[in-house]
Image (tube, rainbow, N blue to C red; front, side, top):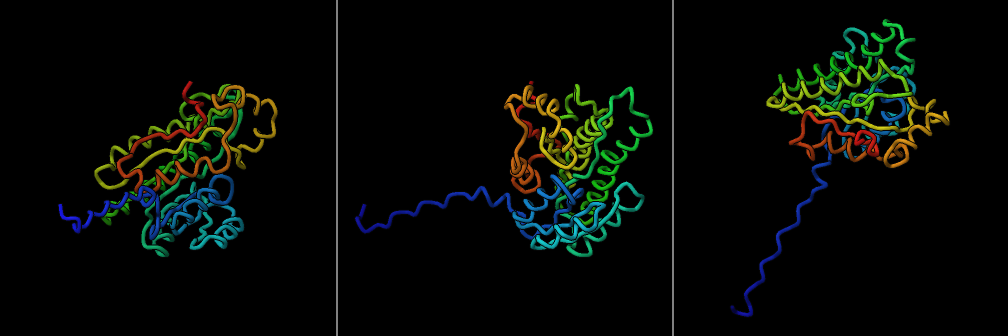
Length: 267
């Protein structure tokens, strides 16, 4: 070979992080006025998404929207008739479409089953299961009609997979268990229509909903004694899983329950 022959350049390395970006996309986050919802909105914004923030507490929503690069606050109660449709209307009016839905809103009422009135059980299932279904259906319906893709991330829980034991959350466990299998059903129905549906199922993370548990020495000891990693989750340990499910990094993933639980459901 002639010494003057140029050496072929090495092909560029792939950029695996690019698939996690959400530039130019709209992400709708429910339950965005506190706890995990606030963190989720911040993470999605950091990845380039425009945000639609939904919750009942308007002042908190407005404060969060004001410090994000591009966000719209829409105070609403998703359990009310017509609220999901109005929320998606507001998102489309501002951003054109909803590309990512994070169904995070929910409640938990820690009462033993023998003491839990059926009417309260129904209310919890309405908020934690029926409302997410209604909003997911609305987002998917419009995406399919427009020929667009969408990613729906439902917030599940380890308590949707295993029993709570001494924590005693029959309504929450029933709703989250239903949400897990509803996710599989919707994923199988919508897979060929371009809409992916997955569950992010956290273990024990401190939030407004779990605040009482984290100040109860016995409850906290139950977690640390029984979790394989010996501790609850730390702030930021859901970030990667959320971005994975929301973005094109998981473009061939649907109908999955992604537990981020320190091994809780492994035993």
